Length: 189
Ligand SMILES: [Zn+2]
Image (cartoon, rainbow, N blue to C red; front, side, top):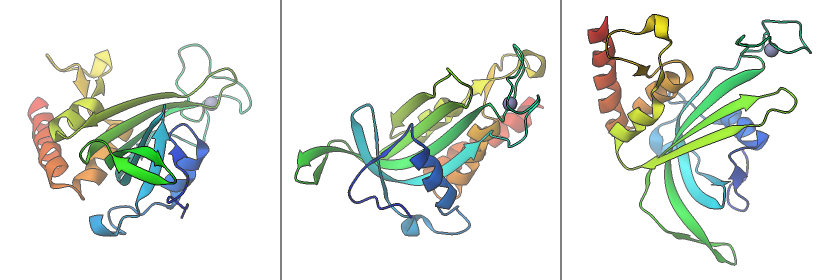
């Protein structure tokens, strides 16, 4: 496990990938047992635990490896989405290694659009909120046109849903919204 007491881990870096690879899943540890990590992004810093994670990454390509997917083609070996839900405490560096809390503990949803293609960089979107319902909203992604049911253009699916279902096992507030979302989905069928 990475030492989190000294230097924060960047959201954009591969260090977070390594951390997520080793981090206990809900069937391996209770919420109290989760290791605390220290992270930063764009000057923001926070401590926290990882409640849920999902990725659409695949090791296989839809085209000749080393090449590029053609225009409009989806290749999850080249471009994918990583979703992380944390329970986090925003802090400020007071100097001499002292970190002062600057906001209450809350959820943060980190959605990373990844790419290994030359010239394409990573996109990061973060949502901070104490409200589990807002976490659900942050996880909604556009539904492809052909799969839409009337009036429902956004839903929680793929890595976003994986992260939510993980987090629901550890957090009561997210368990409630996940259950509500499952009913909403069942009703849409
Ligand atoms: Zn590819």
